[in-house]
Image (cartoon, rainbow, N blue to C red; front, side, top):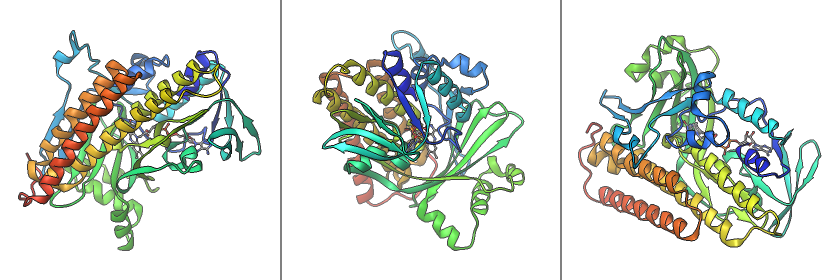
Length: 417
Ligand SMILES: Cc1cc2nc3c(=O)[nH]c(=O)nc-3n(C[C@H](O)[C@H](O)[C@H](O)COP(=O)(O)OP(=O)(O)OC[C@H]3O[C@@H](n4cnc5c(N)ncnc54)[C@H](O)[C@@H]3O)c2cc1C
């Protein structure tokens, strides 16, 4: 939808095909510090979202362990002053309401919205010629953008694009609760004792008195619990009961099972062709713990639509512009996924330096690179190569440290700093 709005504003005739206009169980509620600026470019400034009850302030992130040890991540005040001028506030959003106003914005910008599902893609070699919907409509166009999400990844599947995968398949179970007063921050509760892959619970206030609480574990772990005879609801409530902060919510659990989704973090390569580009999670599924998903999708939308509108008079998108786009999408997604898997989810680094220090080791470079990306908005050859190289060096440094921690005798497994 964001890409459609950008393209329509650039004067193009746009059709957006959406299979789920009712937004069944949307996710992506805790935004990082760089999403508000991208939303403002869609005429959705943070103040308006807060005023209209679509968002709440996210002033910090708290990483909390089962032992009770915690660390607060709050951008320092000096970052907000010149020459940095970083926006120190960000938001949590009610995704159903946010999607609704983005859809209104889409329609008011003259985009044709079709409620249907693309079921096949007609191609002529590397070009996409048309897409065909479930209702039998065949839509031809000069340009195509695929933002079909990670479960569909339409063009990557059609073109059988190579993928890089990170970590095991994961499952998220989540629900909403009424509370007296919610914190103005996201809380991540980590369950990471010993040499285990980490499981965690998010707590996100989407309204002043409503929190979203989600449990993330590997597909294998959920399967094992199901084989022991536990229902999805029992698995969810058992997990909440493990954390002191969430125990009080267990009696309020609704009778219906929590919402559920599964995903596998991965990034596709070559996500562009002569007349198409792939964006958002269809191109790169980044782990939700990073809070990068919405920022990444909005960034891809802005960059991909800029490429299409700039070269719309040509017969094909120039190779260099689309290759640099692919490099940027890949470099950011690989860096986030590799960092979160090696430093936080897996045990070698976490056990050696403590989970809270591991939180710092991931967060500081991730936040800094994300900030630099927002600031400099790489697009040309030099800036894209610079960013890709810097991200690759950081990724390699983390991988070497991970290898070192795994190979050397593991320190006593601890979770506190
Ligand atoms: C459990 C979980 C928690 C998350 N939490 C966060 C978070 O806290 N913060 C954050 O920033 N990000 C988070 N994310 C990521 C975030 O939800 C996404 O990155 C974000 O929604 C952008 O995704 P997207 O637009 O690329 O894809 P989606 O949001 O998946 O949208 C894809 C759209 O394409 C439509 N579609 C699919 N197939 C077809 C088809 N064949 N034809 C037509 N339409 C089709 C779908 O209906 C859907 O509307 C989370 C993800 C998960 C799985």
